[in-house]
Picture 1 (spheres, rainbow, N blue to C red):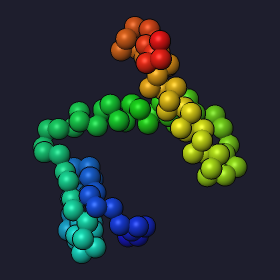
Picture 2: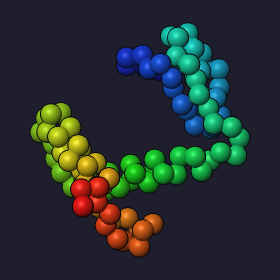
Picture 3: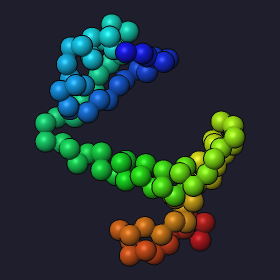
Picture 4: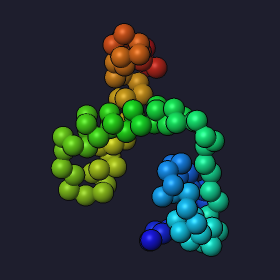
Length: 100
């Protein structure tokens, strides 16, 4: 297991592979706090999972970034579009804009 950097909190899924001592002990030994949703909270991640699906299929998979700077700039532009201009199916594909 490799830990790159040290997060303050790690939020793993509830699967047994993520709740086992073999997985959690290295994190705890590194001083990382664990945060797990309770049993039956599987829908908590739905909105975030949907966001990342959109980011991947509407931005990342369509482009080839040459540098991390380019990737960061393109992702920032996409997320601004996603939040401010993109039509969302939950709103009947209507576009709501913060800037009018």
